[in-house]
Image 1 (cartoon, rainbow, N blue to C red):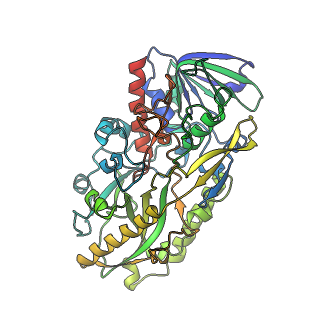
Image 2: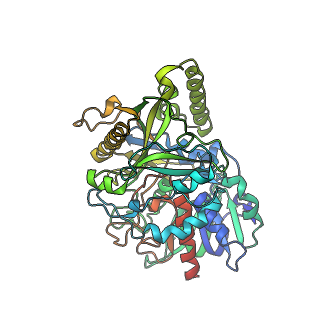
Image 3: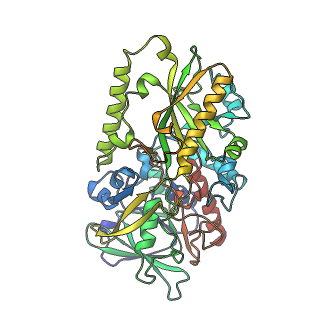
Length: 511
């Protein structure tokens, strides 16, 4: 069932068993897991089914620290969320991503990869990709021409990815609307969360929209499934009963914001061509490719973060502008157009730059987890949006471990490429000086917002517990990448869905 909240009477009361705030990958995955059950599920989506700039404007904020994308255009605010323009890169987190590593401050999840494994299996069909196996041996049997570089597998391994074209907003709209127990309210922006008198549970949330009307929603259980920035914003802004915000007794809400650092880091010059489709953007169905990754044992030896390196033809890579420069419009549609136009220009200009060694030369791009950092955070500012909610500032702060890990990844790859007699790797200039911890203005993020309500069993170290329940509030849970204690090397969407399905099972056990 679908209801446009703008048509409701002012002051309406909506009641149900489960209230999900946000209809992106996390919220839709949980809602559909409850479809056609006996419980009434209320889904509150702040936008409609299409882009509206008036709604998108609610996401505008400020940034400080390391240069970042405009917050208004870094997330999509309508049904389906940011799956409306994601690249579709899917891979599960590695076991090391869940482990406590003594060289990575604040690392370690209260759950393991094994705990999440059955939910990864369930998540794969949600994004409509191929079989669940992500090991290289499987895909080499399935797809042609996936010859790997002959590198020492005890040092460098091939991390496999699958590529989804699923857009949740179009893919799951009819299923959501037709489900008899799902009540989807669009244009219902939650602006306040209200607890009971003892501040032990949530009684209701308040939603508004551009009509000026407000609505109250009551349920037995509530799930915040917006995004890492907006989940933290809503908790911090709900301060009528707790001045520091809900779930923020230890000043942790909004802290530990993490991104994937995505930055060109080195050049790979092969002595001769190496024909393979393994490291190319896939054209096959099911689509899959590999990136070069460092084994956990070598990560521990070098006390480094987990990351990967992807290959791009050097003639193209040298001509592309950094995404942090091309994606600076406040309008996400214009930002995307600018980025794609730059890619097209670079590819066209590179057409004439062929022949000789350049045909087997590549730019190596890093994708790496950001070390958890409490000073990298989301805070409220004085300005309010059109619905009266304080806007946020994102302070993106990186550390020496982040940069040193990028340098180490490419040095290791260079050493192994040399040992194999394949060629040579040259570090880019920003990595040359080991004593320089500064970051170039060309440093990109992956639009992967993580942290801000991190998971930890100790309420003095995390906002939610192992079941994603906000500490101290019996019926308030958070879904999505906001709960990640560490960022992992892979893109977060598959793990977001897996963790959301695990939360869904937990909620069913409470119902």
